[in-house]
Amino acid sequence: MTIKPLADNVLIKRLEAQETTKSGIVLPGSAQEKPEVAEVIAVGPGGTVDGKQIEMNVKSGDKVILSKYAGTDVKLDGEEYILVRVADIKAVVEE
Image (cartoon, rainbow, N blue to C red; front, side, top):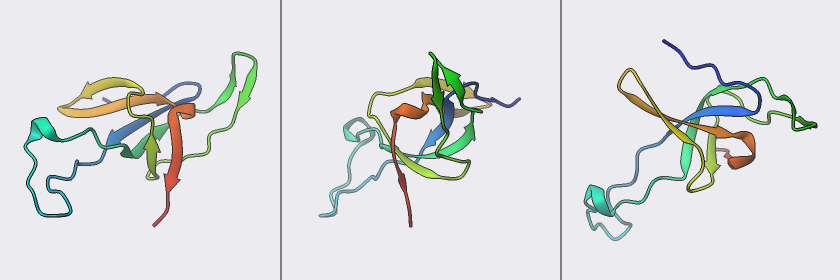
């Protein structure tokens, strides 16, 4: 089963949270914040949404920074994904 985003939606998967601080302190799962960096899995076609032309500026495989509480959580085949609007993606991480 696959998920194909529609309109200006993007399917992403959050990257693993850092388990230790820079000083070496190990954080328990409950103390870790949700990571704001994610990998793009699938991208909708864009098009016209609410009368405005939407251009999709990301592609599958991109690492992106997104709004902290954005999107809809989706579980598929034991994997957790988030479906967000392209406007909730704030930047592309370049390495």
